Image 1 (tube, rainbow, N blue to C red):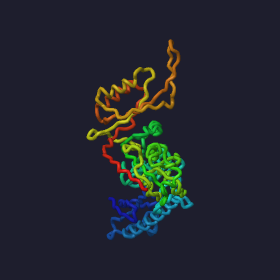
Image 2 (image 1 turned 60 degrees about the vertical axis):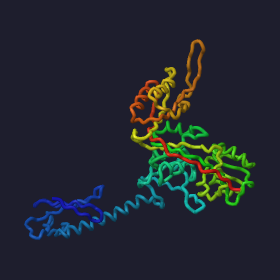
Image 3 (image 1 turned 90 degrees about the vertical axis):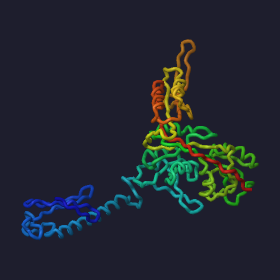
Image 4 (image 1 turned 180 degrees about the horizontal axis):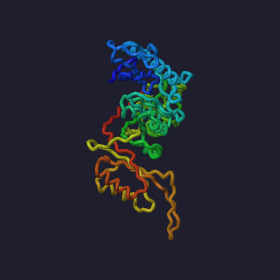
Length: 439
């Protein structure tokens, strides 16, 4: 017969011994903090009082002479265990110098950066910050490259609304943040409608074991930002990311700005640099959100040369999603051809064409491990060719039989094949607001 009691948050499993059994005192606490108390009840006693224990003359070693005394003793013991447990947890969390630690390692302590409203902005993660992260709640944490106000942060918000965006100073740091459970997802750019592919991220996709679980397309809307009160004729230089400068080249020329154009790491970082250093002769090309965060005014809105400027981002996770057929899906693969084969690329493309599968992208990158291939010909001599990795996106789900058969045929002609992800296509419409200029 078992009786259960709950004392101060600790579960008590109480077992009644048959007559003649020996009483054992609770001597230890299990790892799950379950206290097991055993008592003896004399069947000959009319009032249910506990009989003395064997080895004690008058029952002095008993937990209690009655059931109510035994329950009181258990409650006192439980309260002492809870108090000791709280002290142990406090000492385990406190690193001794006031810093929180997990598994002996200090937690991430991001240095706050103040925006114009006095709010603390997180500092981008660096490689030195990567360490096992503590358990967190249900709010999704999404890593992106850049500082608050970057277009990647906006893409993360579009992909995962109400998420906790984690800035990283490098693309690879964002990959590692997901691998080390610091972040749940990563949102990174892979191509731009004007600048083309971001080759660095394609190389990192092959190096790391993350899976593409979605995509999002973000219109790029550039603004010319400066400190409050600064006029355009006072400017001597404009700073921004190299692609942002090239995407606004003609507009800057038409504005008759005699300024030097200097490249920096990212667009939002340029706005932050102007605000922190109080540069009144410098403007930045960045988003309108960057102006709000760093207290800058918008001198000109929508200064990109092409209104159809769109950047495609992919969402990365540690585990792939289950492909479906009830909505449009896209699949991304990478493969290397067999050096002994001929017309390999044609055969691979034919595997998709025969099954009416549309390709949306094909990208070649030199093979990092085998960049050069030698081809001997008795009549011509020795030729040197690049070894390539091919990245392909096609409109089909891996749940479809035609996609499975196409990849089975592709595998016959390739020496390496990897599915980077099968994920829903971004079908959301987008619009670009009209351009405005402040005189």
